[in-house]
Length: 182
Length: 191
Image (cartoon, rainbow over all chains, first blue to last red; front, top):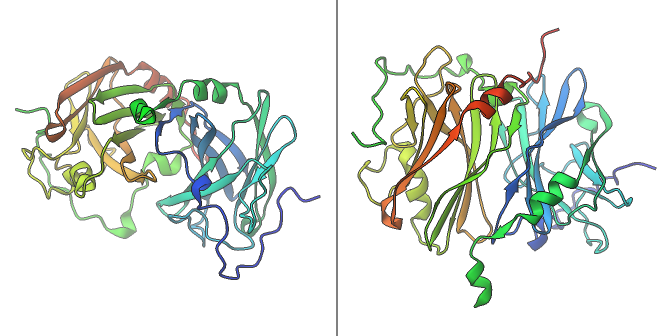
């Protein structure tokens, strides 16, 4: 069974991923988590994860895609452009639940949701795409996964302990607590 | 001299030739996260936080999160026009941010146009990216600071007169940044 669902053909119809759950909450001050790790490395491609932040009910991170030669496809304001061979990113919880950045036409409510909501390039060889997962993982191992068919990158996984994320999430405060009282 | 006035370098920067583009550390290294987060300023209407510090071999990046209680039309210009020199340094509406090393070297966002030059000792700060929040009242601005600070106190400062924020400083020890920088690895190691 493939880790990532196949990307549906782009028929011009909007897909979920830029909706209310597609971006981090604006009314919380995120807490950074000092995590930065290489998720995949081949001779010509390096994927690493950084800029990990916790919110009360989710986490954000940036997946950096580095290519030895300038990549043909760049991440833009909406993250990676849809193409069947683009970089895919996913997470798997210790309880077996899994989410990926394959945008669904009809979102599955039961699945923790992962969306790439912005991106940009540093020079021509390093591209970053910011992700938001609207769920906190349960305690235990949290596995990041990626695959990039266009760059011949097979499925790679990297597991971290979710405890630092959960501790940071517990420390997140509302930016304007009194606004909730109104 | 105000905190924000930094002497111009002796030699004017030559125009950058695209063919001679030099990659910054955050394009060539993985970087190491530094567990450093602090609130730089807070008023009833504005919160400013420094977080997500990443150390590289010869520089570091940080994320400056700015949250405003109310939206106003020229907010974005107030926050980011300093770099372009389109606003005067004494404009009360201009947000100012900077760092000061233990040896007195200082880099600020006011009128700063210089790119980081590894052959120069001058401290430089410049913006790498900016992301706004959904409600239009917040920004996360990533800055790169180079070179690495010397050991000792490292001071972050900001000022935003129109929002009632005077020159406000927060001092940290540069040691955690330097220790992390020593562990940063290249994205493409030499064979």
